[in-house]
Length: 72
Image 1 (cartoon, rainbow, N blue to C red):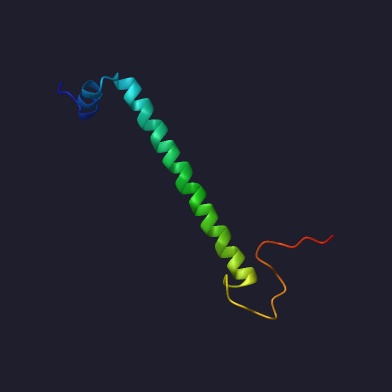
Image 2: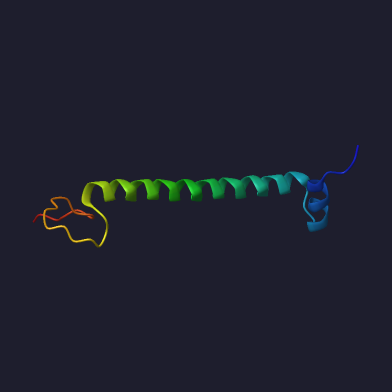
């Protein structure tokens, strides 16, 4: 059976195939978490825009605020 690309890469960088696969798995997981957090942030910003209006646009009839209020 032939040598796979991952085996060639692992050999060239001096890692075992298992170590390389572990590093790839960690990288993919980190990327998925980052993309997921960015997606949730965009969704939340969209919901805030729907409730309080577009950021930076004055609306004198607005009753909701973008970052809440502090009542003391």
